[in-house]
Picture 1 (tube, helix red, strand yellow):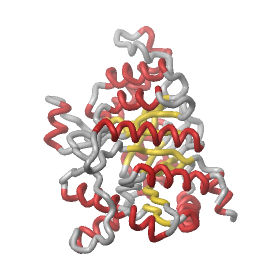
Picture 2 (tube, helix red, strand yellow; picture 1 turned 120 degrees about the vertical axis):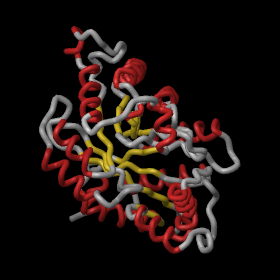
Picture 3 (cartoon, rainbow, N blue to C red; picture 1 turned 45 degrees about the vertical axis):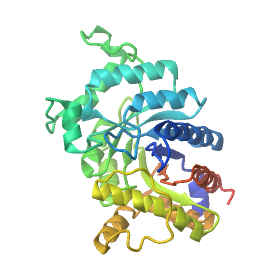
Length: 338
């Protein structure tokens, strides 16, 4: 099997958390995100997604629809969307109106990825949701409510999403466990797994998604996506050095310190304890770090092993020039020009 050819047949996309760089500003973080999206468009990436996070000094993706509009306005052809909107934080009608507005302004370019995690700590989640208490049935019901708002058939309903109605904005379910995989299959929606930070259930989730899939108006056969961490540089050593920023980012996650993205360090020794190192190593199982040649082989193995239809890439790289270069080198792998 020609694995290089396999990678050429798989669309690559970008997930951006809009990280704040240590010593920089929120505005520059947003401008860096736009610059990355513009390069991704030029290099042929399929879509550019932004994920919803709240109350984190390290990320400024809280007003996700506003950033999606900012990115869409600054690009021309690449699909732009959420990876994802955390639906329990919002009333479905509000999400439908927001994404209906985006889809009206940028037709056939807007994706609505949906997650059921809070995207923050529990105290902030309570502030976002106020008195709303989620039950096990809320998420699937909210997803179906969104589908109704975007459908032409909803025009006789007493509650309508205007704009949004009839636009059939494509929905994607995101998850890091098997729950959303089963739901995405049952509803006939595309499914994206968050293997970039929660790799444990990747294979079980993909299996359940495919085995539970029922064709729908949006999709007639399964479409599975997986998100992974990728850091590429000219040499393995250079890439490993750049990747220490990602390790420090993950360290902030497990310590709940949420500091801005730190510059790379020569060694992680003394910065984490053995338990933290083991935890982060497990979280980063699907992280592909190295030169083009090294990453090409690892990604090809991943694609062969998972049979995903699309690979979404996130890169926590401190230096913007190095981050843009990493995505440039990755596009060369995707296009088979390695």
